[in-house]
Amino acid sequence: MSARTIVWEGTDAWRAEVAVVDLGVDRVRAKGTQLGVDPVPYRLEYELDTTAGWETHRLQARSSGAGWSREIDLRHDGAGRWRCEVAESGSAPGLAEPGGDMALLRGAIDCDLGASPLTNLMPVRRHTLNIHEGEHDLLMAWVDAPSLAVVPSPQRYEHVRRTEDGSVVRYVGEGRRFVAELELDADGLVRAYPGLARRVAG
Image 1 (tube, rainbow, N blue to C red):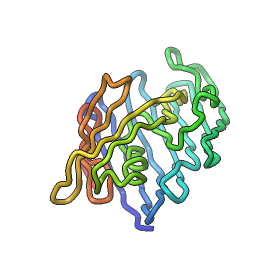
Image 2 (spheres, rainbow, N blue to C red):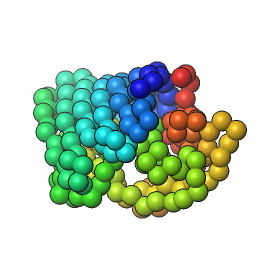
Image 3 (cartoon, rainbow, N blue to C red):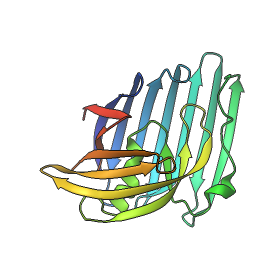
Image 4 (cartoon, rainbow, N blue to C red):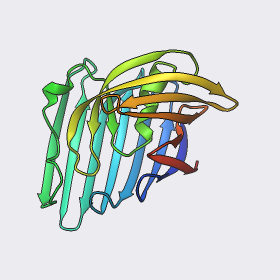
């Protein structure tokens, strides 16, 4: 596996994220930290591990702010079934409860960490949308940042074109109300995600 350190900044709100990403031929491991101010100031730390085929195996995340913290340990069994362990302390007014109804995620094989450009990597690489024409409708286990609420999220990915040193893939989400053309590098990692983030290093 080859390790890279990547830094993104938010373009929709003040936010910064740094991730150490270990890329294999058919899998990824990553550790990252996200800092944000919307809807409350927070720090979020995560560890992501996939199996062969770019399928999520485990996402551990911890978010914290003034007087509160919460953690989730989200696991996928490789057959579309999920379980989630939750811990929290303190009070975070206005944030949804962490975790969620795992039965609603049945059939999903990817997690999608909110406000993070990292987890777009898995569906893109699994379906080689950074290389070949194609389009896929998928169900994601979407993890809100910073609440760590986990909900089902139907999403669509479409290959748009190859570029000199990467590709462009169209993302369609939020009931087809949100559309963005993601600029990716040669490994399928996001360089620019209109309306969310852009890379500043790595």
